[in-house]
Amino acid sequence: MHINHLSLTSFRNYGRLELDFPAGPVLLHGANAQGKTNLLEAIYYLATARSPHVEQDHQLINWEADQPTENVVVGRLVAQLSTRDDLHHIEIRLIKEYQRGQFTFRREALVERRKVRLMDLLGNLRAVLFLPQDVQLITGPPSRRRRYLDITLCQVDPIYCHNLSTYNKVLEQRNALLRRIAESGKGRDVLPVFTEKLVDLGSYLFTRRATFVASLARQAQRIHYEELTDGRETIRLNYLPRLFAANSGRSDEDTVQQAIELAGWLAEQAGLAQVTERFHQALAELQPVEIASGMTHVGPHRDDWRFWVNGRDLSSYGSRGQQRSAILGLKLAEINWMTAETGETPILLLDEVVAELDEQRRALLLNAVQSVSQAILTATDPGMFTEEFLNQATTMTVQNGRVLVDRQQPAAA
Image 1 (cartoon, helix red, strand yellow):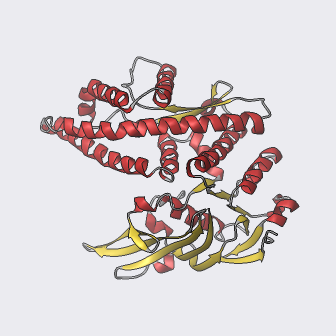
Image 2 (spheres, helix red, strand yellow):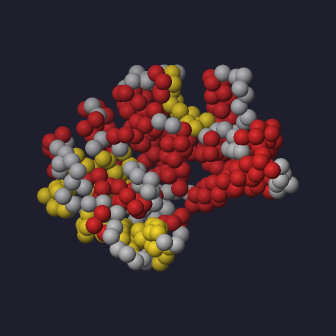
Image 3 (tube, helix red, strand yellow):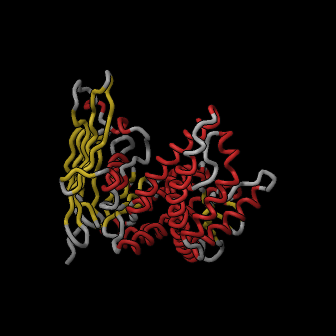
């Protein structure tokens, strides 16, 4: 798939932009703070309905547009894209509304110019994003790693996305009920209803995540061993499901090993009924603790995953270079997985990552760029790219929210 045209209205530093994109590699270059990253953010936002940089939608709005005093569309992102089957039109509107004495923002999604739920926007445009801060997937909190799993899976699996959304709502309701029971003793008769819903939804999430991570792990291990380290280092990616009641008397190492064994069971042997039974058992064991604390202690919302290199936990013992290589292997594996699942390569978005790689890793990444229908890269200095790459790419200068085509990629004979 590839984007043919991108239209932005009042998004970040773009007041108005209409930009045609060719297939193949596109290099956006220019000084810092001119709008290169904002273009990648807009495409990723259309693919996932999430920004990789901010949590609040109003932060995406061009400040000059954030001035109206009545309900109005203050931001608009539109992409026209080609897939192997057809042409498509997707859109997100950012709407400012005046309600109950204050302004709020909401999003509105359209597919083929018809309004849909945001959830139904996902999967129409699929993208894999490379960022310099991706190393925080290894060093950051588990919530960041769960977010990565969810965003990737939601681009491919609408059932997963629906179950995840419903699970989070049920989890919030169940936690509120646990707090109510702790405070007043009322609601115990209703708790099994919410527990049953949580278990049904969570069991699917557990099994889907397990098979997904197992697939990523095989691909990442091969890429890392064969192409990134010339056979010098082995890498292992493990899913760590929280499908058991953690024992305070056990070491972290033992707890991690138990999670690894459960992940293998989930990916290879477990049926949904068996997972459901195990989830029920863990919740039953922890019910007194959960009532006392007012929160659910086991479930997919407590999951994690980790990398090991040569048998050592990469987050604790890996060098910066090893961590960067692991993330590169992960993202390249993500491309392969998404292509296998959908029959189409996703769009690649690379934000200033080439500058951080050595020659071998840079060559591997640019080889992946050549293998997809469309890749959009940013750089402050085009000189870091080979002449061969620049001759194949369309280059564009980004300056103060304006984009000018330097040279169009030659049409294929």
